[in-house]
Image 1 (cartoon, rainbow, N blue to C red):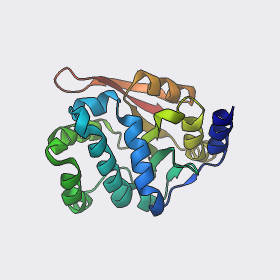
Image 2 (cartoon, one colour; image 1 turned 30 degrees about the vertical axis):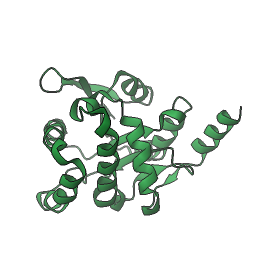
Image 3 (cartoon, helix red, strand yellow; image 1 turned 90 degrees about the horizontal axis):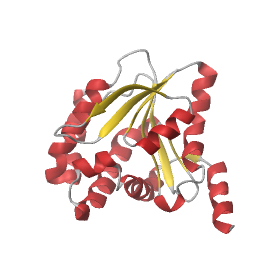
Length: 206
């Protein structure tokens, strides 16, 4: 009962993430995506995957996502919803150049398959109309199945509904796809990663 009550309290107290949350949030997201099909395809080594994910999220949160001020977490930092604002979801050449050294240090030799994944995602990403982009949604496995993921999405979903703004994301597993469908997203395209890799789905919410 205590765990259920704690999960409910976490879900009800969703807040914006701050710079001080970055290490814990990167760890929670790394744990959330450790067994994700796309992550397993890109980071083949089980021993290295958690470090690659955690270090990469630290770089992304500090250099790209937190400055937009649309990252949401819980009081215990057990997960996060990482959004990018309408018109700001594409990374310009100068920004890529600025982030490149930190990305290379975080991902090391796995930067090559990661770059291939990012290029695949970018090629499918719609240019218009302007939309919110849910870059990542993850909850620590110990806390999954308790409504926290839905609660983390809620602030921006409510904003979308108030303003009539669409939203976009990529789902990398059947479970994630089902969650997003329950919150108004519809599959736009099914794709498969290179070399017979796992399936994913681009999803759109009017």
